[in-house]
Image (cartoon, rainbow over all chains, first blue to last red; front, side, top):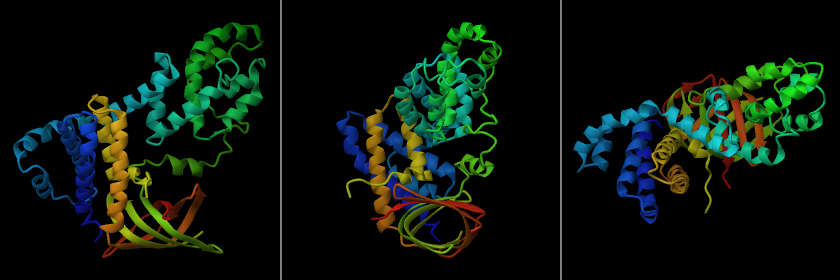
Length: 285
Length: 104
């Protein structure tokens, strides 16, 4: 049963990694206590994830024969930081984003919503998105606002540019929403006078008070024409999604029959982990 | 192989390590560069462990392939209702995602 060996394999990996980074920690002038702390945090999190039947006693004895008292005492302490694992993580992502984009504090509140919905992959996209978007977007010219505004107000904004930026990457759409708020809030103040000169001044106050919704009827990203199935697939909670991470030797297809030869895989299925050296898959499309 | 795949960082053990490192970075006890080094070492260790220490085989059969994607030498499949067969047990699943990097 590849689940019974998971605990052993994982302990082996942890030990191996810790041994090998000991030198890196020393080179960086970091105390070994921090290394031990990392090891304890790591083991704590894996055990609490309950992905494999863990023999806690065996594990504790292996690593901390001399420090069992400390372990017993400190194990309670570990639950404290673990109670808020998501908050520091979220704040970490948020502050990183803030420092890059120089956002007003009001926009941070909106970030929370978006971060919660998007889940884990979002940070990577945020980083890349910032890297990609900042050179491209200058606050004045590429202020896409919401599509409502770009359609209704005077053509101050270059719609072609907006659409290009919209179509760059589907995931960046959510990002765009955030950035528009961020750039939009200071800019909105500048543009309200302009908006008043145009015939329709109502869209701008709308934009300032509510979160921009991108449900529009044209072909922009996130329009009603989007296939809802794809969104459901991507919006699945990453924790509960059954996933296999592996290497492939061969993937072949005959008509609609697909055959895969896989190897060296970690499977997370129904909340438990399994490992395999070789795997075979047969599917029909 | 000097460069190992980072895909295993998405596994439970990888995420646990990343979370732990993030906590220590937040507490200013390690630098992000050191955390990167740890993750690189993790990529290496997990790849070698899976290659040499694991002997089990698995089979997934007769599922309906819902989505397939091949980009940058990475295959991503989404399978509906596969039947996962491991060494001694069979696990029914309603949906599973496979992310596979080139082994060569």
